[in-house]
Length: 460
Image 1 (cartoon, one colour):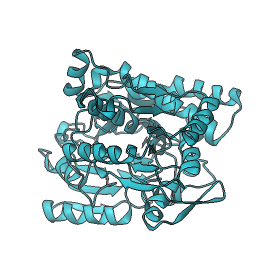
Image 2 (cartoon, rainbow, N blue to C red):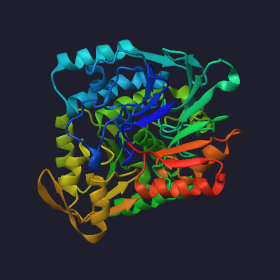
Image 3 (cartoon, one colour):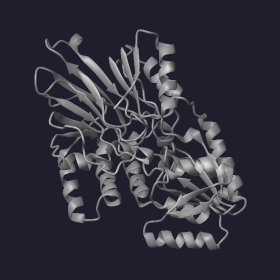
Image 4 (cartoon, helix red, strand yellow):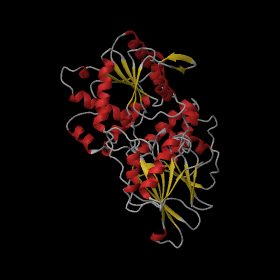
């Protein structure tokens, strides 16, 4: 058995891991797009896929699925296993990725989506399924809830080695992206029973998040200060996951406010057609929500569709809204993609409102190296500037970051994922993080687990 990493080793994007069973069979876990400093012009599949028998998708963020069209174009015809909710989301994500980054030719897009849908196989959580495997070995897999976004999973793969007895099996666990505890809407991930080899993410391997009460209070304080001067609050947010969590928290703040509070009239504007589509999917799969969210629905509340919320659909509506907000001193909270400000409608808002002292920009998610979001975080507090559409834009807006809204587990959560196993792994490979995060997590694992566990940083 061997594991090759075709992404997410020099940063957090481009997740794609190849589990090689023998010289005839291997499996891919995710096939994601590179973003920020990791991005490349040539997106073709540069590794041999002759032995790849199946692809397993952990979740539908673009840095985990964005290269799937190129995998299909390279001739991959095997099954694509993913959770039921992710199977519903995946065609939406791929269609958007194709339109934004590849082509507007609808015939090409339709062909790609047809192939994708033919190859997708939905699997239920907690259920073992066989993987196609040639040679003497056998392989089966199971998805467990990861709590990162709707449908997200970590993957357990059991490899059978002759003679085929249970105690001869080698279990490999791929974490995908693990959710943080107390994340709105979705239950936190539970550690697997065992792993022999663990491939684990490390996005926040060197940090611990604020608690939920603290981060909600921080969100409330930032917004109340921001709207006091009738400015806009710009929140770059991923279409899947972060947007829905924020809507959930904002609905709670509005619901808990006094009848005459400014919260009762503040406009919450969702300006992202993709996020609106995904929000509908979150409502469709309410059975995957956590108990707190289900109780709110049972009481007649609508955490993702409340009175103060307005959704902007067309591009003309988007441009009209920017002009409206620029000419009227009306406080508003704008949620728009992309989460790292690498594209999408948030860029138009930033270009127009970053120079305004009454504007507040609120980052609630990870900003990758080389992204506009990371630059605003770095230069905003210094009254610096950024380049948007090749134009210098001075940053007079106030910049805020709330780390607690990350959909990724922090260092404590990543440690707990391993220590919670009844049978600890003998080998841990750390991926999907900046160097500082990976090294800090590796050091912590060695401290907690001792010398009996081999801990290494994954390399390409």
